[in-house]
Amino acid sequence: MTDPAAIRRPVPRWLHAWAVLTAAITFVTLIVLGQMVTSFRAGMADPVWPTEPWYLASNYRLDLGYLIEHTHRIAGFLVGGAVSLLVLGVWWTAGPMPPAGARWLGLLGLVGLLVGFGEFHRALMAQRDAAEVVIPREPAMMMGLALLVTVGAGLPGIFADDRRPVWLRLFAVGVLVAVMVQGLLGGFRVRLDALFGPELAPVHGVFGQLTFALLVTLAVLTAKPPADDLPPSAARPVRHLTLVLVVLLVVQLVWGALVRHRPDSLNQRLHLLTAFLVVATAAWLLRVGFTSAARPRVMRVGWVLGALVAVQVTLGVEAWMGKFGDEARRGRPAGSFLPEAEAVTVKQAALRTAHALVGTGVLAAAVTLALRVRVRAAGVDEVGPTADGRPAVGELALAGGVR
Image (cartoon, rainbow, N blue to C red):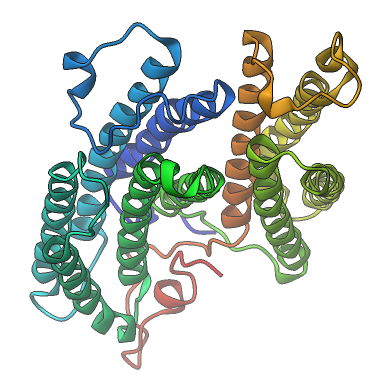
């Protein structure tokens, strides 16, 4: 058995802590506030976009929807800064990176990407009073070139014996791009509402959930790997079930977003039917995981997943009845009930928001579990080359990669 004290970390301990904190900040600020924006129908509380982080201070308005929507925007700036620092830290600290100078070149590209995004945002602000939106070409080209430089700096490293640091760096860059795209989706959802309607709202909501899942993945990948690998006979069924569960949850998120924004009968039925599949798959996964050699990796996250699924079912029933049940229809003439046209009570908004947030927690737990049963056991610093000069098994086959 590998000595746990000798296991190599993919990044320094403080950077993993920052990754966990960034995911937590994203959930507490962007995800919570984003769901409140939807629950209180505050997406168009202020059609002015883009705005500065301090815009609310100089344009304060005592209106609940307006305050929620602008607080959501401020949280976006906060999360963007936290993710930028995280990705810069991962790029600089995540192990060796051949060839010489690639680390500096990639870092330069990342800085150029961030500067280009800032210029892109500034150029959009300059035309926020214009009738049409014109994509700023020069900042967009700057971002594209910077991204090519960063990815190009990392690609040669995938041919090295230990490719894990390179893939971790490239994945972190992908997370940063996803956060940038999510911010633009939220802004264009506001700006283009008058032209195309609220069609971007469910896209923004679903992509936000996927971006949060990517942040959770990055937090898990920066953690210290386990000391021992799973036996193939125990790992294979659990890995398959975790993959099925994550896919079902993503599909369920799509139906859920459509029910919240466009509650027609087809979306309602698909949301309910997929919920049954999610619960059955989660129960099957936990049964297999708790009764096999994979139990040490499954147990802690598995209990969290099971508890969240149970709470989610309860909240789902209550949210459904509040939106489509007899209580919601009471006092309305037959055939005149449209859920999207009714005023939202605080109770209904709280239930819908809680249901959506626990669903996010279920996805995060499922992604974490899927990664935990796939992460390969770690090598140790003391393991050296074999007698014939080749790297030892502990440095390659047990190097903490993801299967």
